Picture 1 (cartoon, rainbow, N blue to C red):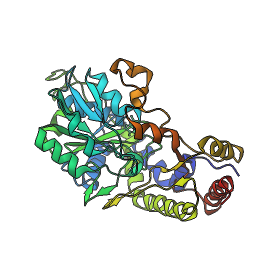
Picture 2: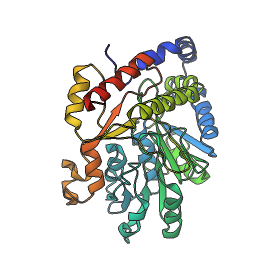
Picture 3: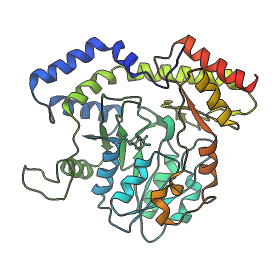
Picture 4: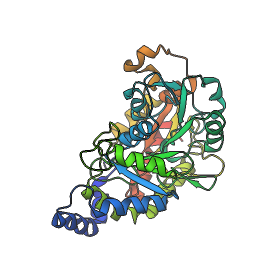
Length: 368
Ligand SMILES: Cc1ncc(COP(=O)(O)O)c(C=O)c1O
């Protein structure tokens, strides 16, 4: 049996009737740009995230970019973030001419280590972007405190963590803004690209709303130089349907993760995902660490089992960042994680047989 890392067709087929109806409604309405479903989704996401406002946009990348633009990030400004993340976190900083100031991760959770943050703060530092990797929120309490004490903005990269909770705060609730991606592989994924910014600050919500339509409130009058970054009405309609199923799907992800944990807990050579104190992890990825990764990869490939390596090369070592003059060894925990991580299929439409086959493959490989 071939087992994909993710099966989006199975997801669609499970809610086909509802989706087809929602899409047909939009097609009949002709309101393809910023139609009523877009405002409805913004309302629903702000409720879901316990924030006063939610502003949709074209992608998670743009949610980050628009947040940084709302803070008027300038060339030469510095933003503290992790080198162990998807490229977009850091790319959005450098696209504005600003400089990523990397801080290593906590090896247990893969999230940025707040204890190492203060030594990275300079006179040019403007803000912090913690990333809630794989479905678990970073240590927001100390991060928000550092932000307050040092007058820095805090933008949560919550692209992988919709619905996650940390100390009673939802993803996107604790920071100045929270950035979400609706890329199809996310727990709430549309049928293309999409994104959202959540915030409790009226000024930021209003500015981001303008920035996403070329910086103007009234058409053809521009207060800022913005971009074109809107969520399609069709995608919003699809997301409204999916949002009704998100809790149920997240629960199945969590159940799958628990069953994997139980099966792998005694395997020498496998480190299970760690759930931090007071955290609700939504398992966008089920990521283990293994010592002999190449061998496991070959075994999974041989058996037709999908997997992902998120991420094989930390961002401080990427070719495009050579100008920052970082070198190997600068962020040892991120570099070690990049060598050891492997993510296994955890999506809600994985059958018991499929999950058991993944378990058998891992156990066989380690002789457990
Ligand atoms: C951590 C992280 N940040 C940013 C993004 C960018 O989101 P998008 O692909 O919607 O632009 C993603 C998702 O791909 C992500 O996983």
